[in-house]
Length: 59
Image (cartoon, rainbow, N blue to C red; front, side, top):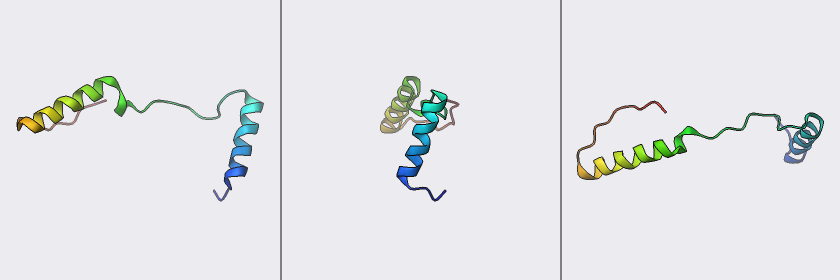
């Protein structure tokens, strides 16, 4: 957008002060969920053992 960091932060700070909220949604990346980490550890164990079956998994 061609803004300097100072200008971008000033806009952000003024918006936070005016609206009394963060002006965007904050969410966690589901890739790092506990259940996905357990799944990835299981897949890595299967790869190491030579028994892995590769399928896509919905997060």
